[in-house]
Image 1 (cartoon, rainbow, N blue to C red):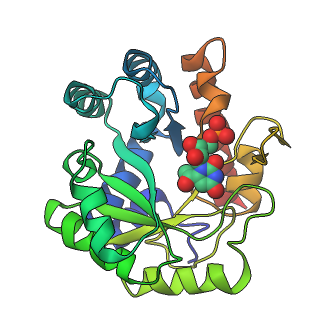
Image 2 (tube, rainbow, N blue to C red):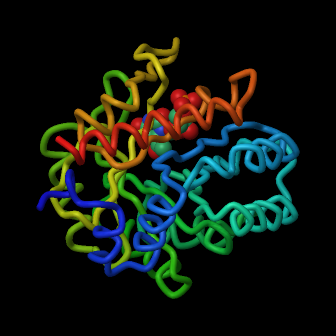
Length: 260
Ligand code: 6AU
């Protein structure tokens, strides 16, 4: 059976990494493949948004370095919300440096990302050292990483052999790399998560190169597993209701795909 027709619970059972197993289990239980991209700049706004939309998501993605008022309380509150609503926390740090540098960027500085983020992502451009550096810090804490194998932005260079080589890098580090940021299904291994940004209820683009596809295109046609939605939710008049709409659209596309 390919990962297109396996249920989340069946895929959970195939995962050796505890975090991907947990994510598939949450997806099955909460009936959602929606990741909220909580790209707001005040911590109060962030926590309110996450509390309102929490019932509809399996994961919340942060850009902690865009917060104007970051402090330890923010991550403590976010962690409490993660327990309350049962979702994972993904810091979208996009590490892209040599192993020794990412060790410090991941564990130290102002944000101490490895202390609170379940999942982070990294570009493959530096080679396997970036994964080895992150793994050194994250693996003992039970963390995991996604590799950016494709991007949603127009004219991006993550295509062709770059994408294929990124998949290989993930396969060689399966204990720590649990999947990809991508815009299509790029691996048939059912334990890998495919997570796709650039999602709105209608296809289109923004003025700075972002390109949008619909949940049914991403999950149904392109065979991805999770939709990552930012402005489609937090810029809506009613973010909780918008999150619910994306939850339904994403989950319906998964159910339809399995029935085909
Ligand atoms: O829904 P949006 O367009 O408001 O937000 C999309 C989010 C942003 C981007 O930084 C991120 O997804 N993103 C990523 C990630 C998740 O790594 C990769 C990419 O290729 N495109 C993209 O938009 O927080």
